[in-house]
Image (cartoon, rainbow, N blue to C red; front, top):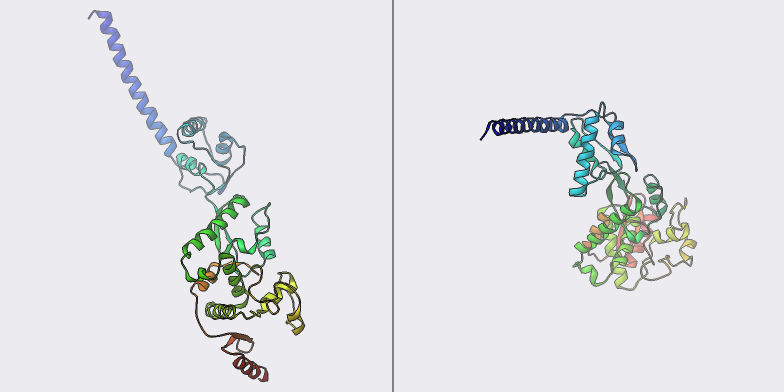
Length: 321
């Protein structure tokens, strides 16, 4: 090897060594850059649709540098290409000890802020509409039979269709769990939702609902009219229940498809939203011999009877007192 080749070989080795050292130092710098704690201007942060990543960083991170912005742009391009990973818009909670890479991981997923929406069992449609108006600008009324009342969690800024889909899936999966229950030998899902709604409006507590559910099953088996006051209230008030007076005997005679004092069998549809706990009680299929009941205001509970004669005697005694 001549002198020129030796010199060239020396310079190539030196250049390679310098390049390796530079690469290692740059790599260490980048690792430090993406892992050092960042300071958020406000928490939670808000990202609007159409915001650029540069705007997001400048608007939400204190003293973000040009180099950090450049790195994030490169990182996102690589992530988008490899993992199809994009940042989302909405509201996000950022941990106070977050690094730049933590920040990117958070905004690359749907909003981590959850909203708690409780649909109360026994609610009317107008009550649910009022509750939904707090969370959604564009929503439509949900029929009683379509959903189960429960507490649901959704990501902030979710649209109404996503929420409704969550409700529908919950109901679908719930009834799949009970698909082998003996009640399905006599009733379909729609009928069970109707019975559940009757329990919501008539029953006071878990034990009361168990007794009333058995009364309903017993009367249906004997082809008796259900004679449930809640269906009269539903018919008179068009589902609002704010009658502001006691029911009269004349109310029991109104010709309405929901009037179970006139028409045999179940009402055409549920009269309120049905809760999961009430459906659980229903599927227990509690059995008793009761056919009649009335509400005793002095004892604040329902009084049950096995025969009309017994029912009249208890009712007479209650009224006499």
